[in-house]
Image (cartoon, rainbow, N blue to C red):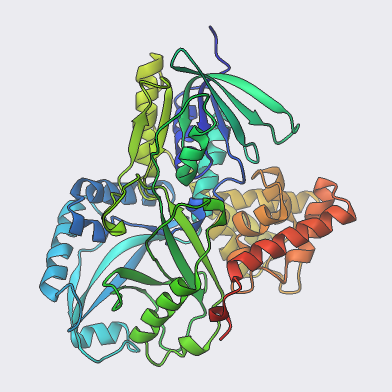
Length: 533
């Protein structure tokens, strides 16, 4: 029988988005369903690094490190506007569990595994060289350190979205706010998917040859909608981060340090005009949608950072906000959380539901390779002659014509240089569409606030070209204003007005959107006293 789709992908995080893109580019008929907004789950709450996973060497995950380092290089090629080189310093103290010789050994292995890289090799540092790189660092017991390179993605949400846009441009049907409510199996084979359509509000059923469950930490919850019992696969751990203001002497480049409390490595990274500090690793079994950074985690990250920078005053100052996410790791009943593998597993449900695949684990860095492997398997199962995989070299949409977009924005003479740089760092070459919208309508060429940083045309672009549906979508996962130190408070009313006109929101609906945004922001701020000492 003819199916509605060759492939239905459940989950619009980085893995689902990458799979949909690869499959659509190869010629498959693809439907992607996401219950909330694209990239609103785990993909939004990472350490925002594209890295090989230096720490994984401790657990002999050598193939994963090799894969990650290769994928890091590829992502720098296909998304240079989003993925940038990052230098990290590792300080080693007398009390450190990892000695200088062990760090050096790890650095050598890291360089060998990334033999094709285009970035410099590591460098071991004396005590004085570490202090020259990070002058405000605690001097007591400092022995030396190392410097090496990885990569940073300031806005991981944009990486998800560009994969979604590319998938759509290649012919995939992509739907946010369309939750799956049922997976139907007959004769031990997947038959169809029931979901609630975001446009009509109606329950819809579609048939598919293959269904990929890429719902991240929600994988088991999606499997619970099957008309048969499935075993438990997921056993996620919570990772929390805090975002703090910079302080005198704060590192201008990333620091990768060891926590004194438990020996766990953590990052202190300049990010978005602030400092991003994390992460923790705690088993979590609740609803991933309800996860928040606890007071204990916030205190842990603040204390460890203040220990390294004793003159920072960090314990006396409020943090900007905190966030937490659940890593979609395989279920393990016992053992340390850090020892749970970070490699991805493509689980084929061959006995209970043939044609259904669940994605377990995976890293932001390796999403593209996971997608390629998954679509290769889909191709073998449906026995269709597909086009070859092109995602290793095909740029993401924003990576094209970036300098042309800069010229167009500059020629408008509406934005200061800082605003143009901001647009290009978010939208890349697609920022040219914002210039086009502004030229076509004088009202949309007006700044929406006194600082002149944001045009009304940008808001229209996120709605018409980037599938934003709510004020939270626009502020936090399109314009990225919600991740500033003020959470975009100075723009919210203006954005609500522009978006309200485009969506046709009533005054009551506009107020509700602003309330929803305030609730979302408050959840990031949290109610912990640690935020406002």
